Length: 120
Image (cartoon, rainbow, N blue to C red; front, side, top):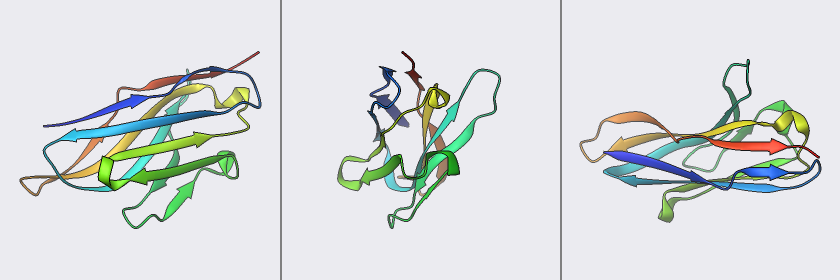
């Protein structure tokens, strides 16, 4: 069994910064791609950023130059550094990992979601 636990969301003023973390634990053989999605009320869940095991990254156009995704394989953790936050970044943020378990089967796992609100 595998669990993803997120931390780091909250309320921030426009132009501010937040850092999200997502730690995986459990029966893990290897973590493949790690990523962050977000979903605002009334909208579909969308990819924000993703990082491969080889540290290749890709970002949504709306966050390029402002957000940075990184990973620490020793800690099974993915991070999202969010700078120059805008009100339109307000959403619930979910981490997503593609994980190969100890029985060598690969599954998709999601974090519990963390609210980020950008407002004065």
